[in-house]
Image 1 (tube, rainbow, N blue to C red):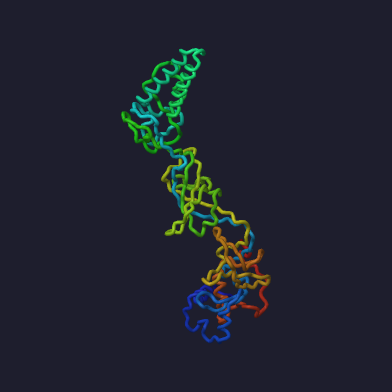
Image 2: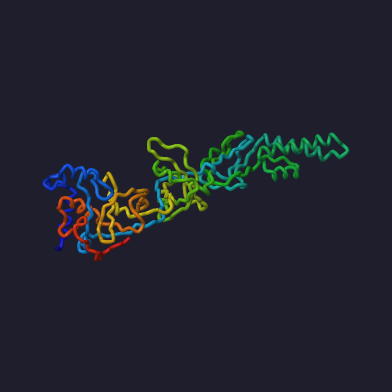
Amino acid sequence: MKTSPWFVLGVAFAAACGSAPDSSPMAGMTAEEHARMMAGGTQGGMDSVGAVLRQPVHLSAEQERALGVVYTTVSRDPVLREIRTVGEVRAPETGLSEITTKIGGWVEALAVNATGERVTRGLPLITLYSPTLVAAQEELLTAARLVAALDTSAGEGLRSARAMLEAARRRLAWWDIPEPWVAEVERSGEVQRTIILPSPVTGVVLDKPVSVGQQVTPGMVLYRVADLSTVWVEGDVFEQDLRFVRAGMDTHVEVSAYPGEHLMGRVGFIFPTLDADSRTNRVRVILPNQDGRLKPGMFATIFLDAPLGRSLMVPMSAVIITGERNLVFVRDADGMLTPRTVVLGVRAGNRVEILEGLAEGETVVRSANFLVDAESRLADTDAGMPGMQHGVTSPPDTTHTGPGAHDD
């Protein structure tokens, strides 16, 4: 008997909604049948709304075509858990520097005079006039002249003069005065009124509190500089995903400024505390940024790929989640579709791990399983689709050639 697809959908809809009172699965049920239904089992069982037991069913090739049934094979595949979260690009704390001076004085010129400019280690930064430095130069030159004036026969006097010279040189070194500049003062024998202080770091100026003409004191912050050759991207990972994240794992990041580009980095740090309100844990990703395209403050999407080994996998569409249990319909060699309870593991994309209930190589229904499930639940009420075979009431059709069979 040929079954209309519209009739099939109508029967499935009525079974799912339970709109017909006289077709209730509980009507006319004996105490023994009710107890059997409540007991359930690995093959068949009661669903989350108290429906009838699911029974094995057999579909002919014509019925499979009408329902659009597609099968897939249970396989053991690598499991890659993808964790996605949003984050923000930050300047790395390890690359932040405050440029100060160890001598007081007045700023006469600035080689870098605006925030956002790039500074390079060793290049000129500030021209400073310092009376303290002038006095230190005079002491240096006095000690140098004294050493030059004494000969080796001076004995203790020469040793004292040399000690004074070394002390003067050491004081300038502790003030971070460049050694070539000190050597030039000694060679020329002249006191330099100003000194050009070089930058001690390479980076981008984030803040410039100093101005030309300003008096500065030892320890005063002149520039705040960040080395952005490497940046941090920080985001929050949900508590249930935290066990898949570890320091050192590879990750990739996307930013809206450069759509389609995958920027590779690694997890550098997992914060030691959990946010009690959001139930998330902050994770830090380290990204190279040699070209300087990543700017602090940019929003980013973080993708963490955690390999979990090889496990039994099926498409998520093959699983019927009833609320109390998870079911799949397994097809045996005779074409019988048997409902079976499975235990799910982690979900990876559109596939899910099977911890219990299936074996590698078994064939399960991948699509249209909700229609097969409706027919399985109608089996005990004798309201199944015309031409359907249930349980083992008759030999099944073993000439299955339905489209999409075993299509993964």
